[in-house]
Image (cartoon, rainbow, N blue to C red; front, side):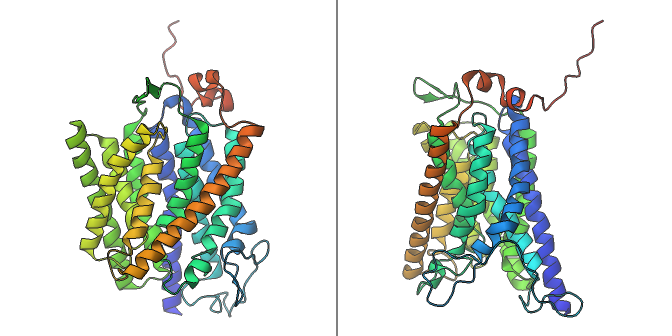
Amino acid sequence: MELFTTNNVWMMICTALVFFMHLGFAFLEIGLTRQKNTINILFKNIFIITVGLLLYCLVGFNLMYPGFAEGSSGFFGFAGFGLDAPLTTEGGLDLTYNEGYTYWTDFLFQGMFAATAATIVSGAVAERMKLGPFMIFTIIYVGLIYPIAGSWKWGEGFLDMRETPFYDFAGSTLVHSVGGWAALVAVWLLGSRIGKFKDGKPQAIPGHNIPLATAGVLILWLGWFGFNGGSVLSADPALTSITLVTTCLAAAAGGVIAFLVSTLLYKNFDLTMFLNGILGGLVGITAGADVMSPTDAIIIGSVAGAIIVFAVSLIDKLRLDDPVGAIAVHLVCGIWGTLAVGIFGDLASGPQFVSQLVGVGSYAVICIVSSFIILFTLKKTIGLRVSEKEELQGLDKHEHGMSAYADFRMNEH
């Protein structure tokens, strides 16, 4: 009973840390974008976490963990609407559900992950997407697509049924790439911000509050203690400890390599590249944080840090406009981290690498197809993009009728 309580408390602490990550995402996104769109970005982030939790309660949790019947194909299942109170022992502890934590703790921990996928899209489409279509997309993608895709692995679906099961410890693919693929499709359909490209060349559009963006990254790093540490699904001392060590080393390596590579290429010390390198390292280690050695983690994080620099450059060359670097961080580094499981650590092998490729490809298909159908339909019906006037004057003024920062100038009279 004491061990059960300890495990459950650790899981609840990790749930709180993952919840705290939403503040980190909000700070990062508003810091790297312009002042005139701050309210809009904050509104989207608050919408995502509130509606995301309600959707996960109503349908998502039972879509993601349907309890596939024996002989099932493992592609789709649904255990019913809402949350059912599980059988409990005396005192209300659910020992029949899981020896490590209660049914309720499991729901809340997984629910925090669900909202993260849409938050990734929020940053990529910042400063030019209408709020209404974004909210509709979030409802469908978080409510249906994310949990169905998640069931393929974490719900013991077809990717988990393979002879060599696909492995994604905490979501390099299941969370980050799921958001990253949708972000890529959304950015392509939306088009770039006014002034981003001039004569085909990318122009810098500086964020209005880099200190806030820096705070956001540090909050996200802290939140990853819960993201990866909680994915151990117990308070096992050895496994939890090594997971947090590999997580932190990959983050540190990603940041350092990103700033070194960008400095060599562009001859300046770019803080935003440093920050995204940290996030790239975190995303990269997430798929295999529990099966890597510290040295493996440093290598994986280092490669992710280098990838960030080249991926950001490639996205610019493709004339795709991603204000916060979400595609490079969450999609490209998510793919790298997932494949790295077959190259490094305890699971490294040819069959495992093939299984990782199959997993990456499977999620690419469902995410690209579903997000394209949703967003293209919205584009052709109600439109995705605000007017040129609204974009130039700011979404805060036109969609919210308010400003993030009060004007404290003294009255001259």
